[in-house]
Image 1 (tube, rainbow, N blue to C red):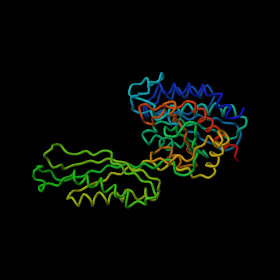
Image 2: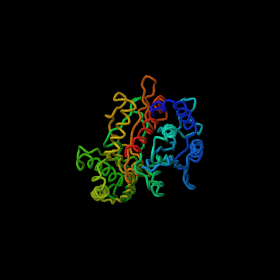
Image 3: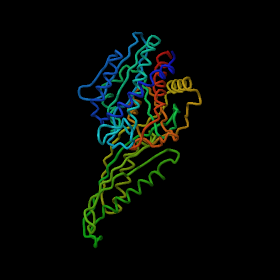
Image 4: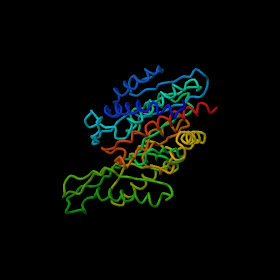
Length: 391
């Protein structure tokens, strides 16, 4: 039986597991019951399992017993602090917690891929490692595993995301830019307090901070090359205590997204220059706290791009592939794996207007067209199969 047929065979199992995980979501770094449920599934398959005493998640290994390469397949397992509004029969049983990003689907699709590859074990050489990863929503969950050397001896890693703006049943296996880098910042502006009726006696931190916000947008439109995507967002502006007091302290918190490694290298120095000089022009001072987070997700390994694209065409034909999905300015901590070893990241479409499935990831009504889930399992398994048998 080929991989497509095996994926369709396991479709009821994949959907059942998706619904179980959807009903039992857990927040980042608290996915202990989720980990137990996943361990139980891999134990049924007879795989070697590695867990971590101080951290949720696991690695299961399928060892063919034959020499060859090692491929890792990754799914994230955490949910969001969102009150579910889908009305599904299998809606979240944990109040205020929801798999609003689709990680329930990722786990189910990876379990499906594991079953498929187990049935194809005799045709494989090398090893397949299944990483079920905690804490992706916090943009740093992958770091624990990297720091604990789980990539040692791994030749490539594959990940995918179910996506609410990509129509079902398409998959996207495009090369190039996929998801942007993420760096966060906090700016603290200090002025001098005075009565609101006598602004000349103070230095207004709100005015200075407002000028900084606008200057940061000018950085996007004038400092940055316009062909390079760049987003600078100030999401928090906090300051002031009374309507008639000149504010002495303001805190700004924001994030920056780009694909340019060169620009990202210069961000901290550029921001420092902007905020300090703008604050000084308003007789205030400003300090920058810059927090580098994640590099960009860029499919740039030629071999893996070819394997993924051929796998999708083999499974679904050109009519099932939609590689014109625009690059996203959101981020993914899969990028931390990409920094270390060759990697590929795909997307599975979940939007279906006819079924009313129109809400996007992180929305309280987000849910998916479950008929696409076997496709995610098939693509994952086919990628691993072709990678291990490519050399």
